[in-house]
Image (cartoon, rainbow, N blue to C red):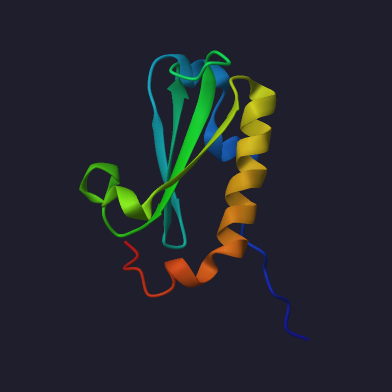
Length: 103
């Protein structure tokens, strides 16, 4: 019997909220790139902004029309929500990431 291993982004891949006080984080998963950062321009206050886009290029060299962002609470609970968002986003947009050069 063949067993399929389900890969996903794990919460431990995204560090602790204190990390985001000082810098942003860039990650990738099977052709999907993402950036998580502290965002302070929201009327609700400080939050986490996660931006996704298809690789192979980095954030600065990818056309903004290919990027999609979402906002989350600036807390470790918010990072839990980001983890679920990224996994759901990947499943729902898998076609966008097929054929992306993986390194």
